[in-house]
Length: 312
Image 1 (cartoon, helix red, strand yellow):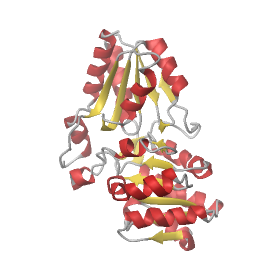
Image 2 (cartoon, helix red, strand yellow):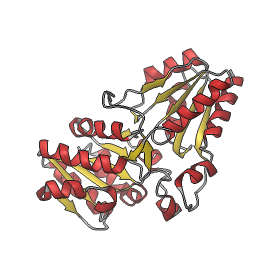
Image 3 (cartoon, one colour):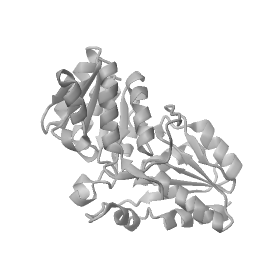
Image 4 (cartoon, one colour):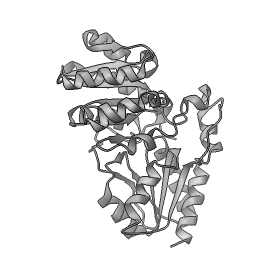
């Protein structure tokens, strides 16, 4: 089992360090700074830190104002609570194509104990449908850390999804990240498992199990859900003939949908989707058992891969 660390803490520390170098960065939060760990930035650059209170829509509109003034705002709150600001994100960020960076923390089921109102299982679907929006889902703390300068220096709206949970460390400091470019983490030619976020580590565990059954699985980190890496997906479909998508999100409108929409008209290989079925989730005492209950166990990935291979 690889070592773990707290991605939101690494993200908060790195954002603060980067903000000292790039004086255009301003950070906003909706009264959750200690949870999403923007307190590091507040300590280092208090003149560029703004807690707007429990007012997500106002936070987004304030961020838009900073962007129109030439600053680079990072607007932070819980991913589930961003839905309160959907209209502002649609109209003032996506439609207006303003240079706002939106950080959805406590994403997916990682806020397990606060219940379904705080489980963010549809954020990617909602924001992915908005033109101009770039969507990133880092798969470990190293990847999240390396995304911060990329996000800041990318011109246009960006949404990044950060887990509350401790995540296995997959990469080392040599890992290179490029927006829109997926990463082949493990090679194989029988089936391609396309995952991101917390599910990448589980997909690697599944690939180990599949290997013992004679199936060589390629594992791809598709950390950018939009724009999706179309050339890499085509290559995976052509070389493996079967795809499994794995996401900590509803299977409606998320990573699986993005992959299917990309391939269906060009290389229609069998695709199995692992994620949350079209249902709300329940409160749990721990994160891992909640993932297992809602169909994201390692064995669920193994089963989906075996089914996809049989369909070739």
